Length: 296
Length: 254
Ligand SMILES: Nc1ncnc2c1ncn2[C@@H]1O[C@H](COP(=O)(O)OP(=O)(O)OP(=O)(O)O)[C@@H](O)[C@H]1O
Ligand SMILES: [Mg+2]
Image (tube, rainbow over the protein chains, first blue to last red):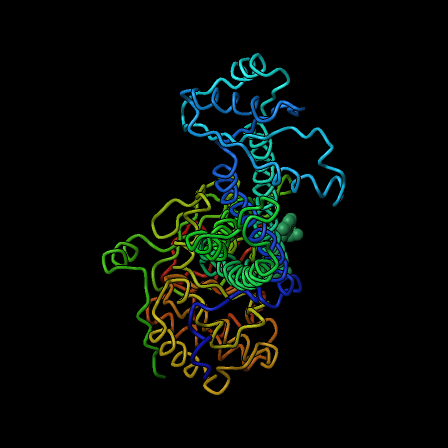
């Protein structure tokens, strides 16, 4: 006697043998692979955002036009002016050698840079939350040394952050769409099962099975393929992320802060298969109960 | 013959006592139409007591199956009242249906076995639906299938069983949860006379344990060999009922 399956609550409807059931786990796996990657990317960008903020926020640089023949007087005047401004924490002229090295890639090594009227650069750190009026400062600096310009990293940061936000929204939308695909797998599997097993369902109803009992068959089936597909999809995505992490540029190359996930974020990603499974189960139940209540 | 130990029942003693007083089935001037078609049952009044055994006969198309489907809550009467277990079920909502159906066993001509489940699994279904525990289910199913002579076919799929064996599996499934009412629609249609006789004897055994039986067949010669009250349907009307004890109805003297 088959002790195990014969009398336990195992599948009364042969849902796992349905043709479509073979693809169910793979569709869920593919969908969850994308969901995991999209959410990982979203979280990584969110983490990076913090890096960009600390790297760029609170900093401006000031360009003083080439002091042709005037020595460092103009630069010194501007530095003094900046240091006297209460909202400014620090102002430091950048060594002209550094300025040249920064330009070298564009001008070519050995270009006659000595002869070029390169502007002098001053790095300025603002006091946090000082509420600096950049425009007013620029007017004042321009009055002191005509042609002095402020390069506000804050503006660049705003663009970067706006783009980062767009990427995050995009990531969430992609995750939502593929999450929906995973959910729809449960709807399709349930609908297909309901129609292909109409006869068995009729028999079960005839012997007193309620809608809840029949729906449970579909809930169990959806749970089965969702947990399988979810684990496979998530594991593949984790593998892809770890592999990708190896090629990520470290340090500050290209101002790309490290795109890493915190332990909590890894845990969030690991929760995707069970969460997807619960959603699939709920979806299967609602789908089955609604379909069953429509037959008289 | 040894009786199966079947302890699963939704009926309490009080309920059993109540149904004993008032009857299992009471039809009052019941008429039935399929959609806007003709009346396939017309002014049928019928009363079946707890633990009684009734035959329902009549020519093909007389309405036997339709009457049983009414009793099984698969159809609603167009007019009149259907009472089951002293409850008016004429307009019963579908969500109340499963609980009542668990008190009714059905055997149809097609047997309605689930093809991918073994004989034992098919018989176990009503108990599984009633959430009995696995050990209890195994014990009862094994015992009942042995009792109907299928002790060696427990793990066979329906396709591997003969018609007579399938029929016994269907009967076992119909009675495993000790229903108060057993509805059998032409269960002898596909089997030889010998098997048919055995089946009826089997149902009589169950009947002795307290299950009311309604056995529909167009085979009047089969019916005549047993002394049970017999109702004859023709053209949707109850034209004759052999007056045997256990039956009450206006047509009794017809
Ligand atoms: N689903 C249906 N829709 C419309 N008419 C039906 C339906 N089922 C049965 N009928 C009609 O109801 C009448 C009674 O049929 P029913 O099946 O109840 O008879 P029966 O006595 O069981 O016959 P048989 O001995 O052949 O099984 C017949 O005229 C039949 O055509
Ligand atoms: Mg019939």
